[in-house]
Image (tube, rainbow, N blue to C red; front, top):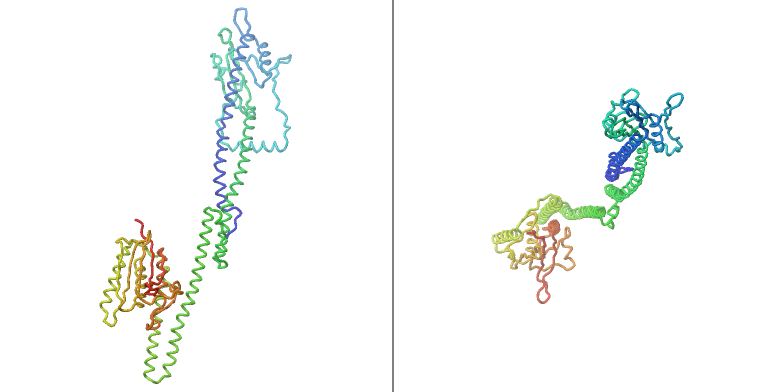
Length: 535
């Protein structure tokens, strides 16, 4: 048996258990409804901020020219935007009615001109473990399918503000939100709102905010999901290995035991006994042990059969050799004739013995390959009795045989079986009964139902069977013949073959003696029990 660190069964169980879990986690990470919800919430908050900031600018950062025209005061607007956005990372910009830049929360005015203020990223103070985890996370995110990319952040140094759709919408008096993608900074959220005074649009406010905090929140949630996944995965793998072990390990032991038996180094005890498991593995173990036990019984039976055959063939061969050696030295014609007759009888005995042995040796294979059909056993028995009765009427008066009768209590004796072999059984029983029953006697064949079985009885009027031999008469080469019968006319295999055929049909056969009123034996009875067909 080939050794494997992980059996194919173990791998299949692992795949079946891990695949749904991995699919669920991958689906959660890919769909990412949590991130989408955060983005929508941030956009809604940014839109509200834009409306508030625009309203504040409209009230506090508007100047009036001498001709009554109103405009946005750049200095006031810049200071207001810096104060309003100070607690946040939001950048606010105001564009005039012609699209020119008026104020920027990150622009600080001075003697040398405006200075752009940029927030520095926080220092990386995480350790090696955290950095490694972040690297693996980033690598994992790269494996996920890419989402639709947002438009790039407009470069207002090269593009007019009015050419940007959301700012143009603000000049039209509408509030809009949009997502932009900035190289190096990722997703940027933006919202625009009109700066109005008495319903007159004087400019447009643009708020932009990085979405890196959303990415941080999503990263934290994904970390939590992956942590739970790792724990569940570890538990799943351990339970899968345990489950595979409870299946694969006993199967490997059963296979090893079967290999031991195959090599001829063990018997049924070599197969592990798992019957206490009360499951399919236990059933398999019990079946293999029973099969191995039956195999060894068959091997022992074949060995015993071979030994019996050798013994039975040796007897007529010894007699034949003695007669052949003697006949060449005997000069008396009468003695020579007697020896030749012995030789002929021994040859016939050998021929009969070899024929019966051949039939017995082929019987197992024929019964295993034979097709069992539905047959009417009552019809078969009636026909068999008719044949024997007709044959008996043709014999001379001095060679008359016992009369054969048949009686039954039902017309339906349907069974599943091989008709030719069942006929052989009852021919053997009738022939055996005829050899023991006196010519003036009677052999009774009867059939009746007993629950789900059909019972056939063959009664003779012979001397009966020795009580000690009621079971041994079905053994091979057993021979108990009536007085006066020529030695060697029977091989002793007939009843053994009959029992083998009956048991192959799921039935049973036994013998018993019949006794009269005074306890005197008045014959023998052979009882055959066969399962009836279900209606």
